[in-house]
Image 1 (tube, rainbow, N blue to C red):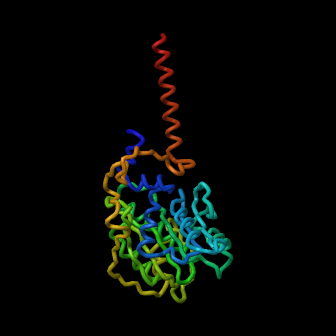
Image 2 (image 1 turned 180 degrees about the horizontal axis):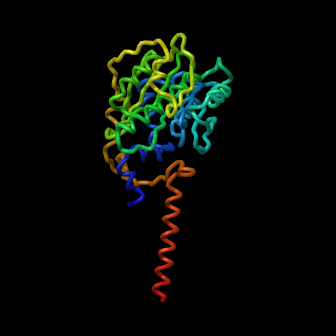
Image 3 (image 1 turned 120 degrees about the horizontal axis):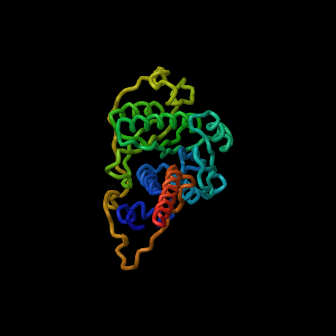
Length: 305
């Protein structure tokens, strides 16, 4: 397959490289903001599970552009993995299930009275293709993200996170509704229709009376025990499903000509903005390469004999 094969079949992948985004997922946050205006007036934001950094890029470009007092803008990116540096973004390499990470975020903002106005999370596990398992694991990641959010988000703040739609979506919605005045589930135009992903957009954080924020590790803690830890009554409600992004614009499931702007100029291929620092597949590729070299050497020796 040629270098441009992926460029041909994915318009947002191509646009991401042309516009300098680290990943096509940048357009998902852009489309969510176009619908919900979550970046309006924000000067303090946290990006959880940030690597490779496309959502942090959107925050950096938008927040510094929209605020006249640049020195008041603070953006914190959190991830277990190392991430290539970004201008105007503070990086914390830490675990979102640890209280130390929450304290580090608050310290960077300047204390309890200067918490985040926006928390976003585009994190997701490596999918197995088994939707029930993938949905469950993603819901546990969302629970961990919500847990640290209750520590670092100011009253009235907003929270955006990825979910996998499934039979337990209503339960997640009910849990989030405890903490936020308005909860919507959005499907950006840049998110493929074939994908079960969507995003919860939670607006106006309001900590329940008597609730004490606590760190929840979904791999250890019993979710049912945590769910019943307060006296709040959870009622199932209808979930608003919102498609965001210009519906007359690009379709993420369509294939477009390389020159999508209908010009006759020759197409220019763009390299990926930021390649992975230490991808998980590097080790196996090196092993395959070494095996191939050894196989060729053995073949040459046999031929020479």
